[in-house]
Length: 280
Ligand SMILES: C[S@@+](CC[C@H](N)C(=O)[O-])C[C@H]1O[C@@H](n2cnc3c(N)ncnc32)[C@H](O)[C@@H]1O
Image (tube, rainbow, N blue to C red):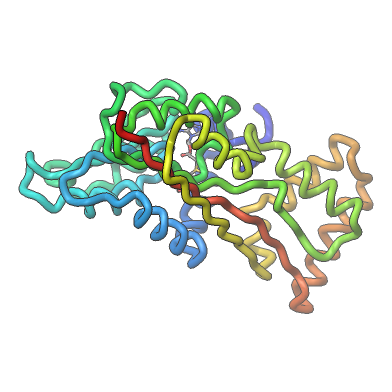
């Protein structure tokens, strides 16, 4: 079995040696104020009113889908709104299903499905949302056009994706640092999807497009090591011959030293984009 990297492993969580690292990465991220804040904003853009049918793509552990279900499902059972949430991983769908407290009353269904081949008819949903999913899909455009297909006329598509070309880590010499951040970004199946989103919304014929840039930064090295896989990535750079062993070890040691002196810093920018399907 090959090594699990966070950058490439989310596209096949079920085939990984330790799916637990993906689960704990998602739990850590969703506990951070930055993530809570852009997620809340993405819900506002989606406008999930009571009674609406919403689709969540790549739902992971299902927390966001459940939050949306609380917003749309406040009507009497049977007449209220509903959330369908899909993910390509059995492990993720299993965890999401286990998080449901009352399957009878929560207006939500978790299904195993590939974002590139959604098992829904055209125009089936009032709103469709994806959060950090397209970056993990090599055919990201196909998945995006599927989202646009299943939203109804007048409905909204909301997507948040990082662009890993914006990933920076300090300190570090320019060449080694560039090698490390580039290797990390290039290991995502679609690591530049962030910058491509506005164009994709236009190409899919969506209107009223709104684009927001949300920049994450932290000075917390243990957190960055967990969520940006800094150590595994440095060892991969060494294994691939992109840096020498002493450069990789030196870079990691510099980060530790900087952290102990309060000088560690890293950041990336994610793009939150919303568009509406025009009435024909
Ligand atoms: C980084 S996680 C994000 C999960 C969740 N949206 C969140 O914000 O916590 C990416 C999710 O996309 C799922 N995924 C990857 N490729 C997929 C595909 N082709 N179709 C559907 N889901 C996919 C993964 O299994 C994983 O749960």
